[in-house]
Length: 592
Ligand code: ASP
Image: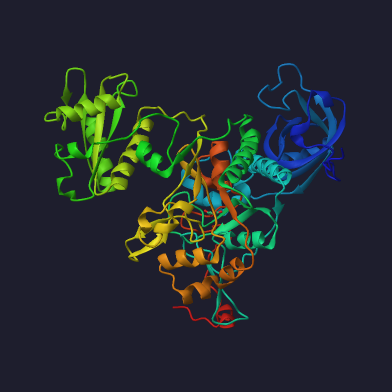
């Protein structure tokens, strides 16, 4: 097949050439990586996106080029024409793909010189990251970064091909729209033509994809760009990419199968392995109960247990937590890792501080119990803990957490579980432990607004069997939402959507969104739901994060071509930047 690889500047990419090309006349173009001059002989390593090839300039053969080659520096753009020859015995570089050959140059041109690099491309250290972001186009010349972006492209193509085979239609949805709540602040774009109004950039294409289902497209996907104005946090980008899916006339099973299928294709390309499917599933309640997290890391064991209510009073911690207080424990068996007294003290203290819980510990052995909670440990509680370690009944350090409520106590031990696994070296870096977490609570209580907030987004359908208690016991309503989790990271979220106008209105009411506000913000949705909206559901997979995890990259910045800093700045463009007076005047805005 014609690859369109050869151009007026090249017959081959540098890294493509090998011993099989010996004797061929070739043209290559790229960037100078190193130059070694031995008087009559100059060697240049030339790099393009495929790799490096060695150019050999011999004064005896091409005296006219020696001066030019001698002047070339790192980063200069060169074009060379010559013959592929085998390297002499002893000069072969087995570490380099093209290490058996070199190009004996007959013709040579400098296409563009370069300023000296502002930072070395080879020795990368954290301290010069802002410099590297400012000169991102140079940082992107580093082979690792270039490979990450290229591998990401191949993963994208595999996902697209899978979704196409599965009958999905790729549709681009607009950026300049109204609010699409996903729990973050909107980025606003003031309108010049409609003074005094703003567009909101999409937090996700959520409502657009629902409209596409009402329109009858049946299956939609998009590599969607989403913008969320959230508070600063390390390794979060204000704009990011999701594989956004929506399907009509489906049940949960169907969407999950598609989610697993698309991820499996991507994993195949990234890691060359077949993922076992279906992924395991846990309800939110089970995940909290066992692992104290709605995104449990299953690369290691360690389960959390509850102190039976009737024994909680025997513990000397959390006594002032009142009704609703919850007591849970995490046994760390000796076979998992040995924890010294001081290590256990430190772990308990920081776990408590981080979560507002009270945490302490004890050591259980066949002889009895020791440690801060060990002395007066009630015999039935000791039995309960030993049974939790069954059948091994081995020695263990048991962390006990008291929280103001069940979720607080559970989450406290959930985080501790991960810290301990990390400390004990039990986290298998190669493993890919996918799972689904389902049946999330529909609502979360927001202390700040003193109102119910959607745990996912306001268009998520409650479980049919919980609809009856939507108004009377909102805290107990479960949703149809499901998350895909990988190694303790939430990779995707999704849900079956509300397709009944009445139920959507009821959910808005419970969320404290009155009729007027609902009409103003989501009137078109309520209208669309009254024109034959089909049952529908979908999900969005956090693509940057997935690529990062699969490629083993250390941060999102390593898998995004033009990332922002953690404070949302683009150091190359110098964005964001103040608007000019004229721009403000055009928009009818005054800067405060
Ligand atoms: N809008 C997504 C969905 O498909 C969720 C998300 O963006 O987190 O449910």
